[in-house]
Length: 174
Image (tube, rainbow, N blue to C red; front, side):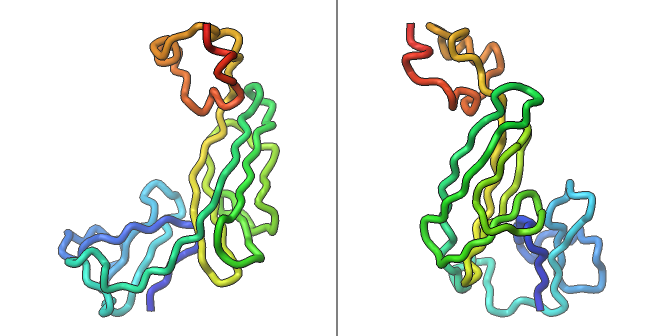
């Protein structure tokens, strides 16, 4: 039996890699996110016999992933925490559940009052298809300040593309 904790990304490693696990006496385990203070793991008491790492997992049954569209609204000014994100499933079977940063799932795909920072969302449909999304809420720039700006101006000011979401092309063109 393999146990995977929900809301955690998992990357499998080749069985021939050196074992760096903190769960000895089990044939396989891996820390899911090394920077996670809780040190969640995936572990197995028996070997996985239906998979073959040598052929890149083509012998494994892989369900179609749940596809999601995402609409991000940045924070209008630092400290206002007025950012939001909306998730819309493209496929899958309703009803859907949405969880932000491992919190209890909710039935709405809209999360509001978000502050600047990066977040992790987990979306699952009624059949168990799921998707994980990492996104960041940034602070919008004042587009008028950058009228006629070059790409180098944005680079020099450490402006990220996502900070331009509120700008239109005419706001920046000379």
